[in-house]
Length: 98
Image (tube, rainbow, N blue to C red; front, side, top):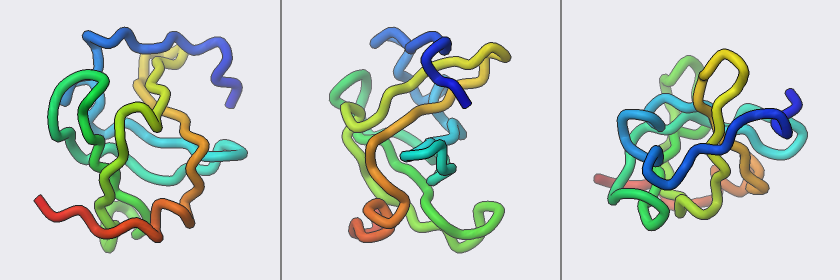
């Protein structure tokens, strides 16, 4: 997927409502997880991403700083994000506990 033509979200759009369920893509467009929820608001929030598993079962929640993700909308207005982090690097993080 060519993300260069997608519209980046403005800081005031970085909300639970807009980001929940967004797919996170890593290097080479690898699908590495989905946004579960946020802790905090805006650019200082922690984004909780469910990594691994199958169809959401067995996924491990990990916390990432908002700054590690570049959220955008595609041509169909679906929100997703890219990151330089790999799926393996995320799997190595400690499990997030609410």
